[in-house]
Image 1: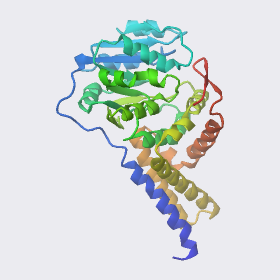
Image 2: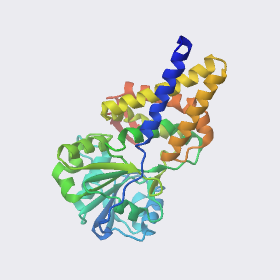
Image 3: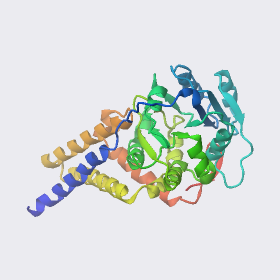
Image 4: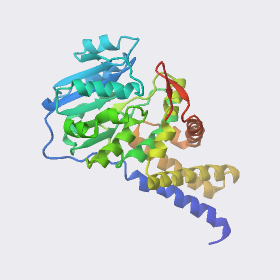
Length: 349
């Protein structure tokens, strides 16, 4: 192989790791003995979620399988979150003052679990919602232990396309070996054995730490993509909210990803970056244009597994990739410092 072919060959090899990683984006399995929804308590931590709660609660009301109860834990909201939850038939639990050392979400989840009557606990973020028959499909896929689905990312405004690589890296890093923060289904006994959210009370990305806690206790941890089952829309409040949301703990999440998985992800992102730079520096040489086109096609395929990202976003993938690198660097720099989120000042993991 001549020197001129070494860089293209290495780039192609690095980009190909994306297809290997993409095998992780698989739908959940099906089990013959699904748990009954009558045993299920849904717990929704909510802080200023009056605009999100109706969609989630209405989607639950439209399911053919119904939980035995829905608990919305009002985490110090200054809007109509509690009233909206009651109007939609949910039981509202007003959170006690936030104790020292706790995060708002972990404290709300802990209180909801303490008040729950079911022996299956389903924790859901307020910005998620079930697709038709989604709850039945989620319960049919439940293998026992701790189970999580990556919600399908709904896109409505152009700035939300910038979440492409954050969403991909988060999903690829957690799939098959961790838990997703937006949804957790676990039996009460397993939750009790590990100490529940009290064990991760001070963590922003409690899902990563909970997964390790369950695994250490010998409790199986399973995750899959939730396309067609569970959907969410991240950071609908605008670009600033998107920046704050991804900044508050993403670098910590990367540090919790297994080393081999993180190495594969870094290799893949390096390949995508090299292809884009070489295409520009070679003034659009046909060979590099072909490699770039393959990269864009791969990004489009992967993006459609996790969200409604548009084709044009994949064709212009260097833009969301550059945004990812810049924001990730800022998040890593700010680890341990304070950030603002939903009216609270918190320390970034």
